[in-house]
Length: 381
Image 1 (cartoon, rainbow, N blue to C red):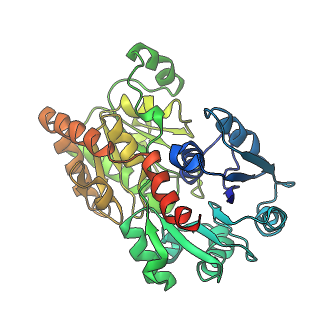
Image 2 (image 1 turned 180 degrees about the vertical axis):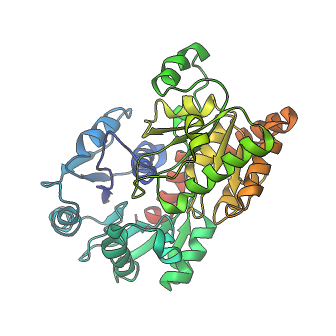
């Protein structure tokens, strides 16, 4: 088979987001699948202009690389890459199958394809999305989801599947659920704790702290977390800090009360080498989001043995069931109370850490690739 794997979603090699990491790990896992790679397949990886070098670097790390050809978009323009360069390149390849990771699936598709839809936030919470999502990606996804050449839609949780069926009016048989995996760096326990110090110093972190992770955008509920952190300090006497990791979204400024400013640290973007250190050195990971399709930071934190308290909304109950403590993200008092009860009980902290590691072992990129290959490619050989 001639298989096109689209990785044009990777556009910022210095700031890889969650969906970009999913695209990279998925492609790498497909190429590393031993059963699949022994077949006579040629893979064509289509990359963005800025993301090409990073994709090439990641692919070159793989042992015994199968037949792979990489192509680089001729422009940095996102829409031109999606709607002109991608279909043009695909038409020249004449593939048997195409798998898209981009949100901007080309309007014109001549070959059978599958796509990933991570969540339905654009329809469920339209006031929380960017202008780019509202005016470009949202209508493009709607068109692609009903395209005559569409074979399958992959999504990342049963919750997301139900939401996609609900909002996009798609037959549920078109959609399959495939849980995400955890990168190897989050399973690495070999580092001596003294090696963590330079990273902590780099971000001016010292002493006890709880941590949150997410792009600064409305649905991540960072402002609600800040409100709850204030209650945690005033009502329960918490002496530690709150560390918030994530790049700026479209929230320019977050209101932080004067008496909390010295106790809340915004790190900005943190890469995959340093992020596990910041997580592992924390007392607790807090995930206050209003809406998630999966919740990758949830399982990454659990894999490191970090206790997790989480919002009880959307996919998070499904992914964190049995290992996390949950709260209503709209109730700031409840959030603070749940955080406090976990922090002050060493037995609970240890039990959550143990259960979290066990839960995290259920998620792997190799398992993700096996499912994807089985559903999309095996039946077509």
